[in-house]
Length: 235
Image (cartoon, one colour):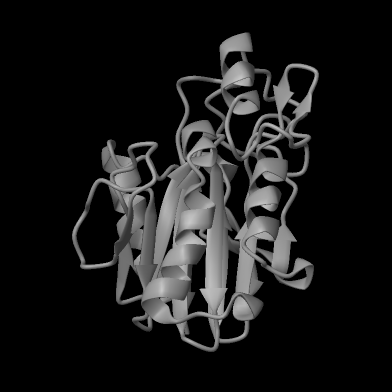
């Protein structure tokens, strides 16, 4: 993992050996909000900055739909591709960006998991899709959990606490610290349930709300905020 600067903007870059994972920061107000002119311009800039043919992204809807990249914007929260030099990624400003890579099958995926996606087990479903449609072996799937709001800062209401505690999957899981929801733990439980090996799970452990090391967009901290973009591409 290394921090790189491109035109004054900071990215966290990870060489996966055959693929590259990248997590943007908000240094110098870098913003990937696709609803703004500057956000769309920065999406285009990614092609130049990382020498990419194209960048696939979604109209995220906090659901659990997963799609295969087709060079068009679709309503979904997970995107897959096996095409080289095509980045696929997700936007976030507190929700969890998750990047997956199966080197053996040459497949990458990016998943967006807020509390709704986490509750609906979108990460489990992404792994099932890799197994079902790409014949991936769980032993070969590497997972990178990017910057998101940590349990340190994610206080939730009683209704949401009850929703998770009454769910079939989470009802016996240790995912709360008082009234704070631990999204990372939720995701780790999904990964363990699907048989992903500990050695293949990588967590950046950077809180979007309170990190002192990185400047990051956080909706919880400041509702008028931009978006990070987390993506990966096959080299």
